[in-house]
Length: 406
Image (cartoon, rainbow, N blue to C red; front, side):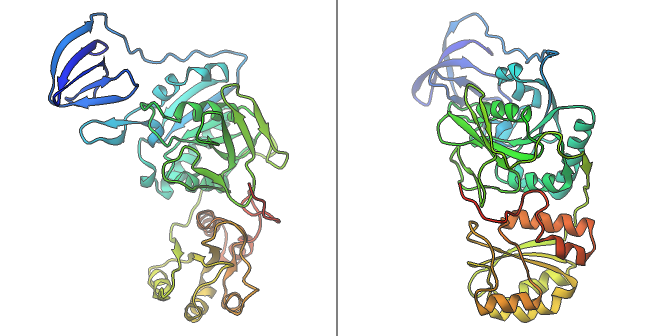
């Protein structure tokens, strides 16, 4: 029945639609409004069109005059369909199918696709970041002129930060995803992938995130990988650049791209991979009345990297100071702020000054998640004293001298 248009009775109502491929024993219909609906119990009343609509596999044809881009799929909503057994979103597309759904890519670049993972982003771990960084490194070594990484949106900013520190890249490495799965009429996946392809062939030489700039289909923003955060659970423009400005904008459907001057440019840096991470690091969000015993808990289990998400300018309760003083000689303790926008300054109030004397290092205007990844990378590649010094050094654009706002 796949590809035929049918009329059925289910749940006391009449439905018409095209029979879609199904991974279960449910009948999946694409209705005229664009939505896919699954039916477990149904009666086929009539086959309205005998001619079977084919669902061909995408064919990728290369053109010599276009740059070569590698798409690496790791899963997430951009590579998901609805599981009609449960109504939940589950990963089911291959990387080639993602390319096949965005035929406009063929006018921008030649595409090779690889399915590295097929997992949701909450299941990503540091060892996945390392493997992904190595895969990107190999692709650039082979001569690909840009990399697109499709990724679940929930933890995409963590992975982007990890690659930004681990990988010095002479070409664009572009993360993108979708807030709504590609089989839904309101999906943002096709536009995000198209704008990512434009970015991957541009004059950039760093790790970025490309996602919708508004709730409409008018343009995507290019965010620096160490300055971006997901700020809404479901909006298509959920990603925002924090304490800086977006690196650029890609208009849709024209593909016109605008880039700011202050950026790493294509070919500016040599390709280098430093992929060691110290996983025994933690991010602790302070709240009023929180006991400093949490520090001792992690310390006794071998943790030596701590990022504190403090209040305001970078504070925790004064009863934390003695515990911090006890462990700071053997640990890297970085202070960030729950406010997100703005920068740390522990010299304004007495508590901040005491924290500095106890051994806390100011995290400047880094996002807490970025600071965590940076601490993991520093402790994985340097001795403790060097890591403490480098925390406040801007390495890949994670710290700005003067905080800028969008």
